[in-house]
Length: 364
Image (cartoon, rainbow, N blue to C red):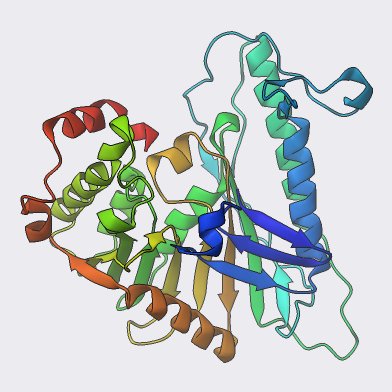
């Protein structure tokens, strides 16, 4: 999860605060100014996640929060076993948006109702921790679904809707991935969907969703090996750029019948970490919807990492133009990736990388 709060404004991004993000690492950033409700949501999200997390001590060791600071903390200590791998069925329902002013745009905060129901759990400490933590997170999330912010008397109807989405695999919360699949599922015939990821390893659920919509024009942007943050890393990590090439080639083979093109971001001296989605109702129109946040749409994002995204749907023509400019600037610094590219001698992954992929794909 990567978001930054300044008073009542929010920067939503996929970037952390490492120095290269301020110099030569490409990412995305969207600033939502003067939006109290959205700022409160992210503030509450950070607080509730802190309650169910370990505290990092000055000596670099994580552990429980000291008792004098532990008000409201759910303790998780000396627990054994592994989290349940079972996932509950998705329950989905419709809801009306709530309204709130958002800077120069008239925006409305919409809380997604895409979340899972909790399956019965065995009475172990770990299960109790997961159940209580999940309830705490979902209680906070759901509390924003029906909140109404007062609007100025001269404000018109909103023309932009904002939906914060979260993904917490250890707690079986899959709102972000569920909504992402719904965006693909509801794409119109003849529409376009551009997708960017710093580390390409789409889940099979996403692949199936894409295959189910063959009339959509897809464009996928990923990092060229020279723009991969693991380039020239020591040891096993040095093979990671090759692994992503292999995964991209596997994906291209699966979707060869679709109108789908892949591109690699390559810019001298730069690495690539931008991720997200841009959707347009017609392939030659600017985007009306974008997803921006921390998710790479990969196995780690839906199985292991805590993720947060913001879905932005707008009728504002100026915002459409800005999103088109953002998308175009990223794709302009890219080269086409094809199966012929993957077959080149300098792009073939070593045998040991292929072996690692077979065993550890779900960790990428």
